[in-house]
Length: 180
Image (cartoon, rainbow, N blue to C red; front, side):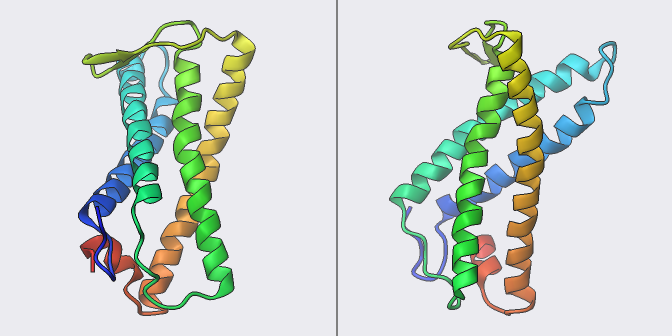
């Protein structure tokens, strides 16, 4: 779990990229699903996959945040300006909040009728509370808007990494790819 003095540990990199892939995959699946009609063969299958991977996204997010809290991140590859330091902390903080709120809002949508969430037919995450239609509708709206806010923050995060690689020519991006 300890990072290399100038790079990220294998655990940190695996959690980062696994979380990123699951979140981007869920976003694509979600966009595709909203255009399916009730009678489409993939209507329920897509929803089941989205719910299952949503639970995985939550587990990854919790693991990612725990690792972040107990692990020590390496120092920045190059000195950051005050703006960059504040921006990085704000973006990471918002990403952590979104990584928790998105699955929770999806869980509230999925369990609003009192039924649990089946995860790939292996385990069922029970419904903790049965909510009414009003709470479900609020969770749907929250899930929808958090997806767009999250994509915006992910875009800024990605562009910042590319900026460090292309313009600053530092090792910020490569440290998350190779660890050094």
